[in-house]
Image (cartoon, rainbow, N blue to C red; front, side):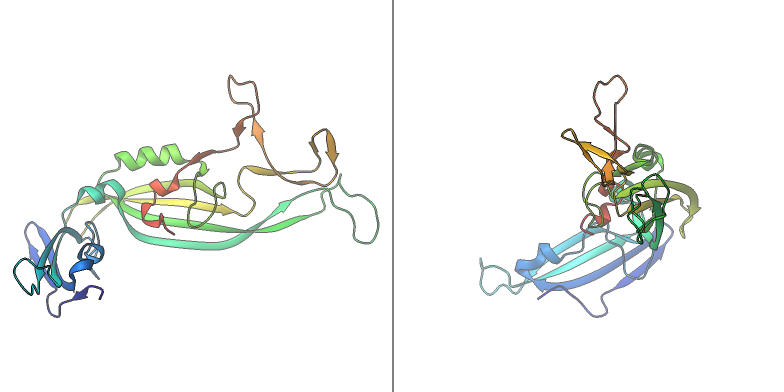
Length: 253
């Protein structure tokens, strides 16, 4: 059985020190660690209240020395900032925008004749674009400001939101202060990621040379540069960055 919340066990207490909450559950003894609330997990339907302590007690012992059959789980919640919240923040809002962009390219041929139009701009190709915006709250701006500085602009180094590396661009972010319901000053941070179907490291190349042979047909190709003090083309258009550090809540997304 999965954890079952005990009826009438959920309580919320308002004090001068803040808000405290409590929830109680029952589950199979063997599943107690898998189904218990996680530290930092938000309280249902109450913004700013997070799990700070979990207590597990055994019950249903048939004979002395035998294993318990079930467990009672007591989860305590508090409005005080936990180290987990300060480190990773808590997602308060996400949004997705779906649109697209027309990318001009050359190297085509007119439909009604054999004339090569490679030297003319003949329109483009429409590619989907997705903008992912996430807003999170932080008790301190210091670390997240450094992270945003290092991540702007970069592309995803590893799989992010189920998409392979190089297709998400960290376009930037913003931050502003607000006062929560307990009168505490916090930072609301907005991060903006843009998806590119082709990949942000590529540009349209009308004519490429591969193994000494000219390739007449153009294609989207990765662009490389010679880095400062370098001797070979090894530097990409964008640096890469692990976006899962910025949005760990979406690591499995």
